[in-house]
Image 1 (tube, rainbow, N blue to C red):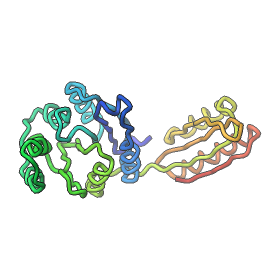
Image 2 (image 1 turned 180 degrees about the vertical axis):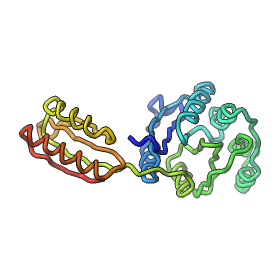
Image 3 (image 1 turned 90 degrees about the vertical axis):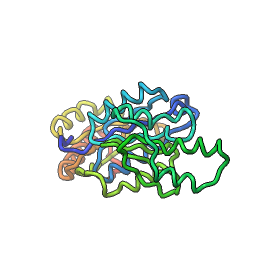
Image 4 (image 1 turned 120 degrees about the vertical axis):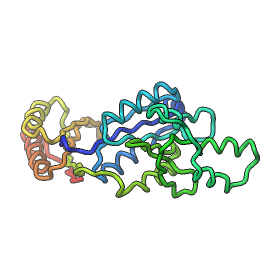
Length: 251
């Protein structure tokens, strides 16, 4: 793949994801959205609500990838520790953000509830706010790390506010084709084709449909000419193996 690509890592924070109580849908949305912006998600991790684990993951990701996007752990409860962890990762203090605090105070609440809500106004010193069109407290950014809510609708609103504000690379495009062939029947040909086109990723994904085994072949890269050439080579390999290419798709 392109060495000049703009890359990202997603850190999904929360014990509820690891326990299976909550099913993550944020990674799919983030990867698809960033992909449309020319930013490639190269890695994703699910991290528990443990300070040392979050700090280590953030420090690794922010020095490895162009951008880091975290989801979860910025709510009003004791286990919402993401802001504190980001501050520790960057070695800066936690401060009360006046803009967030004022937004929270606009919704009247009993003192104990207000005190809990005000935890969401705590951000690392120097953080830049990430807009939240849902009307709730915003997320924030420190350097190349973007901290967003775990609630899907809120996270999506925060991410949408970044459109046009991030550095972009070439958009990754795809080609795909399926065949009723087992992976082993076409493995040799695929290996030769991949060697011929190292700039394009070629993946094979088996399936069982209509009482038959088959393989979906997906090509991903930034050069549409090479993608088309590889697609033709893969289709020829399918025909050579005695089957008909099906479900050809350009994405």
